[in-house]
Image (cartoon, rainbow, N blue to C red; front, side, top):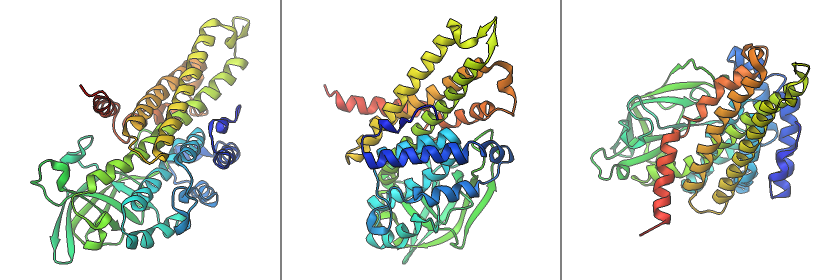
Length: 390
C-alpha cells in the first residue's frame, strides 16, 4: 500500500481499524485473490480472517455483542477490502445491510434472535428483492405473502441474491397487499430462515466478474413463516425499511468502486515508472502523466464523497441523496480508472497473469448493483427538488 488512506478517517479508533484491515489486505488478500477469483471458489480462509477481525459485527450494537462502529469506519473497511478483492466487500455487504435493518427496525424479539448470531458470524445474511420482472422498479415485485392464521404463506421467485446459498437468514421483500395504492404501502419485509419448508435455493449464476461469492435464484412455494417474521412486526412498512437499508448498501458499493479504482491506479503508476518506451519510463511522457493525474483526482473525489455519505448516515438522518451521489460518482469513475490503467499497461493488461483483467471484469457490476447509475440520477434529482422548493 503506497499510502495509508486511513488518514481520511476522522475517528482515531476507526482510523486504526481501517489501517489494520489495509495491512491485512496487502499481506493476505492480494497474494491470493486472483487464484480464488479465477477458480470462482468461495474464499473461506479470507472470510475467516474477516471474521477474526470482527468485521461481520462491525455495525451490530454492543448490546448484542457487536463492535457498533461508525459507517465512516465501515466505508473505510470496505474500501480496503475492495482494494484487495472487490468480492470480499460484497460478501460483507448484505450481512451488514440486513443486520442494520434488524437493528433499526426489528422487534426486540427479532434483535435477540438474530443479532448475536450475526457477530461471529454463526449465520450469514442475504437480501432478496430482485425478481425476473422487477429490478430497478422494486415496487413491481410479484412475490406475495398471504396471511393465514398466525402465519404467512409466501409464493414467488427471486433473482441475483448474493450469499444465496450460504445465508442463514434472508430479508425478503414481498407484497401483502398487491392492490395497494401507492404500491409501496402494500410491501412487507420478512426475515426468512434458510430451513423454512417451501423455501428453495435455486441455481448459482455464472458471472462475468464478481466471482468467489455465489449469486443465486430463490423460490418460495407455499413457504410458511410465522407472523413474528414480519420485520418490525407491522405490515406495509417493508419498502421504507429496505430502502433505508439500501443506503448502507450504496455506501458499500461506492466504497467498492473507490477501492477497486485505487488498486488499478496503484498498479498503473508502478508500471508506468518501470516500463520503458522511446528511451525513458513511460511516466515521463506527458500523455501518461496527464492520465495518471486525472485518475488520482477522480479517486480522491470519490473517496471523499463516500466518506461524506457515510458520515451523513452516522448522523441519523436520511442519506439517500448523499449515498446516491457517492455511489453514482464512485462507480462511474471506477470504470474510467480501470480502463485507463489498462491503457497504461498496454497489451500485457489483457493477460490473466496480471489482476487488471479481473478489475476490468469486476468494475461493471458496481454501476448496476444497489440501483443502476440511471436510478441514482433519478434518486438524486428527486432529492434535489425537495431541497429547492418553489
